[in-house]
Image 1 (cartoon, one colour):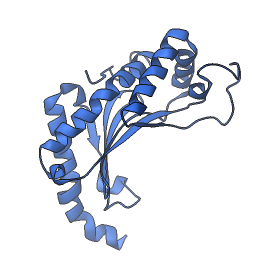
Image 2: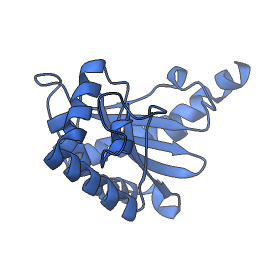
Image 3: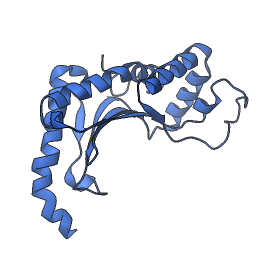
Length: 195
């Protein structure tokens, strides 16, 4: 607690404020990213003085994230903390031949582009679906996250950081669009997909 109090002013000036500036620059470049939140000092408990996270809300439980820590910047698209209705919609869309194949293709492309696809998953094949379903692994997901580290370099302290974040967000657009169209509950929190 004492260490955290001692770091508060420096962290605000050297970590949180630059993250707010970065997200403002990203939103200025593309209005689809205007709905963002940068977590405050008290909200980041683990290694609070070493990291800063922010989210850009695209729809309910569908968020782009930007994280800065000692390893540099990292971006992600996350569908997480979903209510049961969204999980049911997700599974129905994955099981559907057309939308399920489209999601599988989007995820394969992201992995080829250097994104790591992860998420919370059930241990076993979901009841009601055959064990040999062509997308059985995707049906087990209760959340879906695509992450890519951007690293750090001299660019991180310049306007080029916003360009790198925007560049990393671009390949995530097909996945964000799929999640908003197929999973996000209709009529809630808009449907921005970053382009």
